[in-house]
Structures are given as structure tokens and as C-alpha cells.
Image (cartoon, rainbow, N blue to C red; front, top):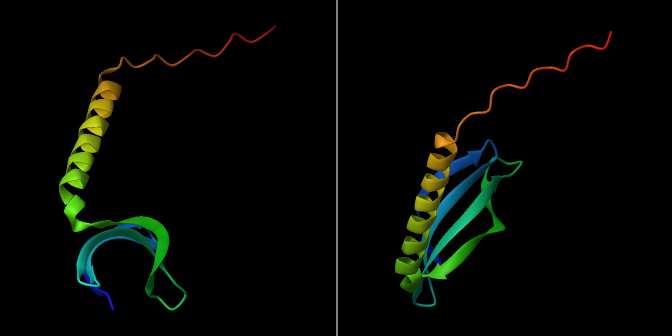
Amino acid sequence: MADDKVVDSFKRNATEEVRATVRTYRGRQYMDMRIYYLDDAGEYKPTKKGINLSVDLLPELTRMVDALAKAVQAEQAATDAAPKEAPKEAPPEAK
């Protein structure tokens, strides 16, 4: 049987949340990041949308998330620094 511990979570929208969980299964530790949905009874249930990795891969996952954060920040900085286009004028009315 798996032993689950929710480490953190955040709301994705009104009916979904993303959970980070550490679990032990057959004596091995795993980390799971998964989307949960709110069912009709008001309980959160897991979806198939997620990833389950051995905790041995945590350094690689951390490196990847850090690289992703830097790429997003660079993209946002480039977008913010780009000159803004002037609004286009409406074509003159045909007479």
C-alpha cells in the first residue's frame, strides 16, 4: 500500500488543483505532481494528467524547472522590452 504525503498544492482554476506529493510504494520513494479535480461530492480526485518520478531524479527535475523559469523570465523580459506598435488608424471612409 502507498503512503502519501501532500507537500504542497495550488489552485489551477475553480475546479482543479495541482498537488505535489511524496509517496512510498513497495519500499521506494516517489514524487508525484498531478492535477486533481473537484467531483460532485466536493472531494478532490486525481486525474491522469501528472508525472510520477523516483526521488532519485529530484536534482534533474530541479535543474529542469530552474531552466524553465529562466527561459520564461527571458521571454517575458524580451516581450516587455519590445517596442509597442502604434494603434493602426482606420482606413478613410469611401465617399
